Length: 66
Image (cartoon, rainbow, N blue to C red):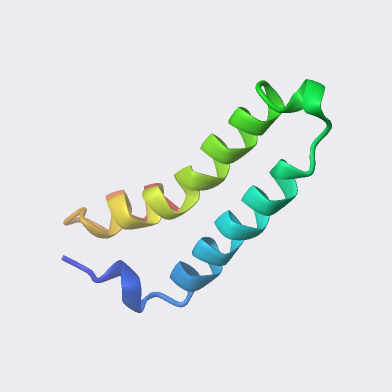
């Protein structure tokens, strides 16, 4: 099993999550429930897929999650 925390992309993905959450809080109030939810769920999936991909045994499966 690979260690996702050692990948160079891991801190960048986490930083992107924080930046997008901050930007999403600045959306107009009428967008708070629809677009805010969609943006935050989408950006959280990036580091989640990185972590999930590193748990895969084959290189093919590992790459698929990226």
